[in-house]
Image 1 (cartoon, rainbow, N blue to C red):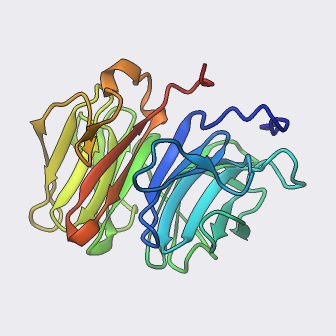
Image 2 (cartoon, rainbow, N blue to C red):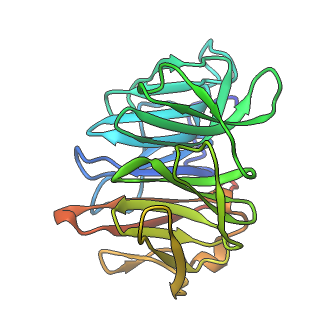
Length: 273
């Protein structure tokens, strides 16, 4: 279990697990092995949220200042190693357990309205599992999964329609994860924020978009291979220089004026020098 660093030795953000744009203030939140960080618009350096060192593995933003998460506790807290599903109603300042405390650790976590999907590990068996909830994470049902998942995206118009990025392939489900079919051998990290705009970043740093057509179909086409995504005309770190495994990358979509802007964060998974 992660042990909190002592005062004065803050390692900063280490190993990025997830990203999200808070619709309350449009700040980018960065969930990492060493805590949750906030990057306000126009700033270049993220700040630690609430002096907490919680290892937030699964992370998603579901509304203004309202976050869902999972992972492992700050070493100063008397909590079990697996946090199950936790929720913050104050932009990460504090967290409360929702369910599965001590029983589950979600590494991939996505939600839309009351529908929540989590892929991770069971405490007792340490086996991977995909769980689904239709009541905001209070109760769960097991779902099938085609392989170990690195990312998951929910159709913003139909929460039973999912695209999953596995270790080797991309998969589609039209029944909430009950069944899956393979879309193709490509895989990567996914972001889906409008009916026809699904983005995927592959392990080699290529940005892909998906043409989402008729129900039950999804064709992923490589439309542009780039080494960095630009946000507000400023290039972020080139992907191919830092990317070691897909685990250290996540995607978030900022939607000012309804125009999706892909945002990419890359970390090496080691402490900064």
